[in-house]
Image 1: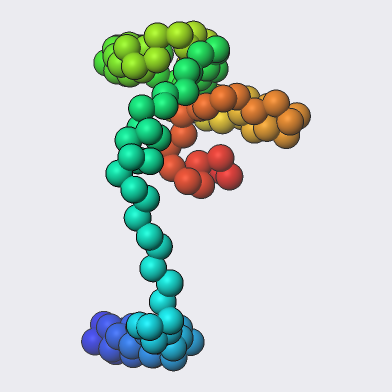
Image 2: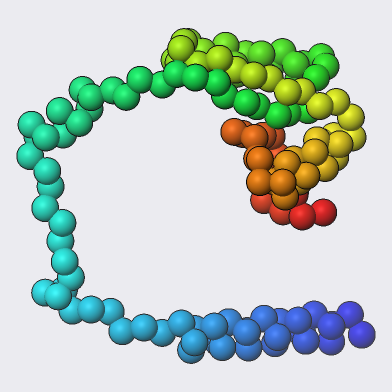
Length: 130
């Protein structure tokens, strides 16, 4: 029975790959029709690099790293940020509990009210859905 299950899975896999390859075929444009962007002159690039936009104000950060090594890590992260952007004030909003579950509930409420924080900690892309 196990051999048939594995064989069935292989057949389904191969069949799905064939369907995907058939549905994804696009004709590539001939080489002479491909637009090539011209590079900017070196002077323009240097001018753009020299123009620094000042960064200042408040940065609100929600996170759940509130104890032990996690707290040390977030403090080190903030310190490194402030070295680069000393005119920014970090408004830290640590929310303890539940490995982020408590904070996610707060963030969802803020987003639904149209008042999201500047930034917040999240574990993975679908973390706010659950």
